[in-house]
Length: 273
Image 1 (cartoon, rainbow, N blue to C red):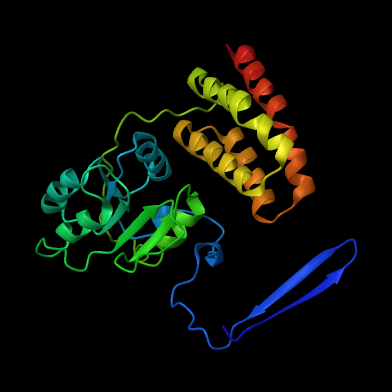
Image 2 (cartoon, rainbow, N blue to C red):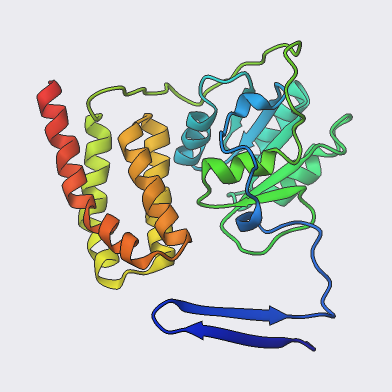
């Protein structure tokens, strides 16, 4: 490829690898890992009120997105199939589409092709929601599953204009009742955490696999958003930061605290009850 690789290393501190490919064309889009908003606050009300069509066959994913947008001024329309999304797009004319790529029956690409045949929807921005590392230029943008609030915020920032106070508010059609928790942990959430403690956590502690730890932390983030449970959100954020920055010592420390944390959640619930 006509490039060069070099490395500098300091004992006890680490190594820096540099890869240079002078004749390779650079993509016009930044990778999701490089998209860091200048504004640390992730307030989705900073965007002008928008109608957002969310298409995903997985109910947990729809609930996660609903939790992210809970209480703001955007209007969300949820669909579980491509066929349903086409009908809703004709009725509502969304400003942007969050579209799962792999779905039973009509997949994301086929769904978007039909949506763009609708008058007024020819150029609608469509963000692919996918577990694949490959980007499809047919979509306007993409977020990779499992994604965080930050990643979704940064992707939407490329397509939604900033909010002006005179803009009329929109509303959200949630896929189900949102559960808010300001005190004791919900029993359902506690049961899910205990299952993770049994099934996933022991293997992570023994292997210290960074990518699997990222996935684990994002699973916890999804649960925290779904149940609006801030203590879990704070823990998941720390663990994800450790994995993304390869802070192995901190990652090992925080992973080791998970069992005690779940037990503390359970004790706090009993005290409040």
